[in-house]
Length: 289
Ligand code: NAP
Image: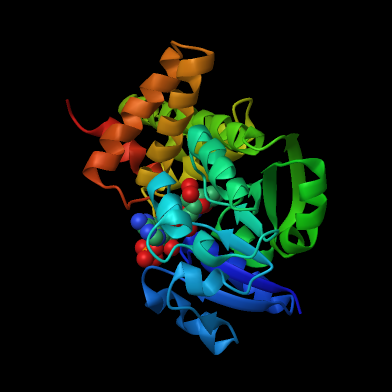
C-alpha cells in the first residue's frame, strides 16, 4: 500500500487527508492541534507525534498549512518532516505560499534528495473532501509523472504550468484577482443598497449578468443577505494571498494600483476579523465613514 503522510488538517487538509483513506492508502497524519485528527484516526489514520514522525516512512508527504511560516515550520522546523525523509520521497506542497518560499523550499528539499512538487489548489473545502480540487502544479515533467498516483485522490484536474514555482504564480494571480472581484462587489452592493434598489433584483441581475464570475455568483447573495455562515475562506487567508501576489508583482510589474487597493481592503478586513469569512467585506465598506 502506498504510504502518505498528511500534515495540516484545517478546513482543506482534513478533507484531503480523508481522500487518501478512502483510496486505501496507508496514511499518517499530523496537525498542530490534535483534535482535528480524531475522526481520521477513527477511520484508520495513524496519529504521528510530529511532522518528522509522520514523514519518516512515507513515500509521499503532503502539506496543507496556512502560509510560509507554517510551511517552513512543518518541513524544516524542530521535528520537521524533512528531518528524516528517505531520498527520492515526494514532498508535495499544497499550501498557498509565496513564490519566493516555493523556490526556497524547492532548493532546500532538493538538497536533501527529495522531490519537491509545487502544488497549490483551487476549490473550496467541500471540493477538497470530495476529491474534486484542481491542482496547479509547478514541477519537472518526470517528477509530476512520479507524483500523479499521489495527486489523483485529491483532484479531478491537474494543470501543469511548468517548472517549480509556476503553479504558485498562477495560484497567486488567481487569488489576487479574486480579492479584487470580492472587494469591488462589496462596494457595488453597498452603493446599490444606499441608492435604495430592490436588492433581490440586484442579486439576481448580478448573478446572471456580464460580471457574473464564480466569485460574484458565490458572494453576491451572501453579502446582500449578510449570511456568512459556514466560513470557508477567511479574511486572513485572502489577505495573505493578495500580499504574496503583490510581492511577486514588485519584481515583475511594479505599480498594480488596483491590486494594491484590494490588498489594502483585505488588510482592514484581516485587522478587524481575521477568522471571519472573506465576504464580510460588505460590512467593512458599508460602515458609516
Ligand atoms: P485553516 O482551516 O485555517 O487551516 C490552517 C492549517 O494550518 C491548520 O492545520 C493549522 O493548524 C495549520 N497551521 C497554521 N499555522 C501553523 C504553524 N505555525 N505550524 C503548524 N501548523 C500551522 O486553512 P485552510 O482553509 O485549510 O487553508 C489551508 C491552505 O489552503 C492555505 O494556504 C490556504 O490559502 C489554502 N487554500 C484554502 C482554500 C479554502 O477555500 N479554504 C482553498 C484553496 C487553498 P491548527 O489546526 O493547529 O490551527
